[in-house]
Picture 1 (spheres, rainbow, N blue to C red):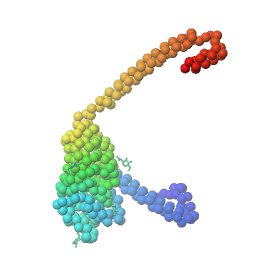
Picture 2 (tube, protein in one colour):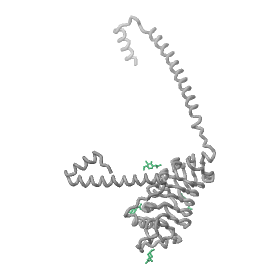
Picture 3 (tube, rainbow, N blue to C red):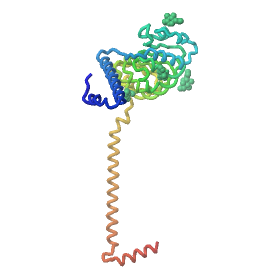
Picture 4 (cartoon, rainbow, N blue to C red):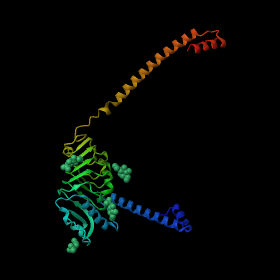
Length: 312
Ligand SMILES: *[C@@H]1O[C@H](CO)[C@@H](O)[C@H](O)[C@H]1NC(C)=O
Ligand SMILES: *[C@@H]1O[C@H](CO)[C@@H](O)[C@H](O)[C@H]1NC(C)=O
Ligand SMILES: *[C@@H]1O[C@H](CO)[C@@H](O)[C@H](O)[C@H]1NC(C)=O
Ligand SMILES: *[C@@H]1O[C@H](CO)[C@@H](O)[C@H](O)[C@H]1NC(C)=O
């Protein structure tokens, strides 16, 4: 790593105070950390492989993740009964129903597949602690509430995101577009409303996108590398745009004409107004001139004014 002149100065100044030294060290560690993350991202972009940043606390955090997940969902048929956190053997959570790990002997969750279990509750925010999760399938349950607006903080590395056939409401967050590894998005058969964020069209790896059977409206995203069939959009409140019928861009198409028409009308009215105003003004001026006593003096005027005041 190259040190800039600024960095050298920073370091040369260290002998002054110990506190400064600690602070600069912390900054430097943070900077190195950032560089490592950048390098990982660059490598990923080159290789097209996902490289999950590993961390020493990842293992405990995945246990916390599943504890939180189990705790946040009602499980009337006890499908998660096998999730026993008393066994602290490394890899024990990998035997849980619906859990795949990256490696069977390591508590690092790869996929969570809990479809069709009548699970009830809000979107489980504790998933944020499954830091290397690539697949999430909570389809055909009774999830309610909204998809979190900061979803990319929670499921950063997911390639597959399946929340279909639940009771989720609210909008599809545009932050979902920041989960840049997504191949599969299935949100069909919920109560989702509003527009589909155009940003989702930027997802470079998307292969499957389905939002049928919701209450969505407005233009659908333009996916650059993907042909989406109309079935993926079926049964909504008013979606439009390829592959569906074109959006009624009435306001957009006619607006230039309307603006020009309004401008001409406005100009005409203004011109008329100015014209009439000028005519009236000039009449008044000429009238006033006739009334004015060309030989009037201050004395006469003050008498007139005084009379006027008394009269009123
Ligand atoms: C704990 O989990 C490990 C790995 O899954 C298993 O081999 C072991 O039998 C379990 N121990 C108990 C007491 O259940
Ligand atoms: C993640 O786990 C930590 C404990 O390891 C906990 O304090 C935190 O609340 C968890 N985060 C979420 C979003 O549940
Ligand atoms: C789905 O959520 C709506 C509110 O958004 C609620 O009225 C309805 O009862 C829920 N349906 C089910 C099957 O839970
Ligand atoms: C993605 O994240 C960046 C910063 O992390 C943010 O500025 C941007 O708005 C996000 N994009 C979307 C579509 O939310």
